[in-house]
Length: 93
Image (cartoon, rainbow, N blue to C red; front, top):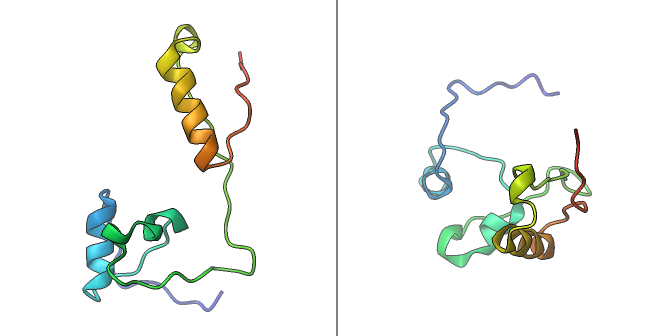
């Protein structure tokens, strides 16, 4: 909207490295708020919402059809559902 573009875009996969770059004044990043809730990763950084309600995304758990009933898959979905909003498992053909 402000017609501002970064001079350089650097793709970094590790969250800890992204946060170190931001903390050392060599970058900015958009991350889920739970990343900065971890005191081991926060580096005294400040969370700012991008708009009044924040940015949300719908997340899905994906697995192979024949793994769906395995205990570790069920446990993972239970665990993940408690931390983030995940819709009920729906089989799609």
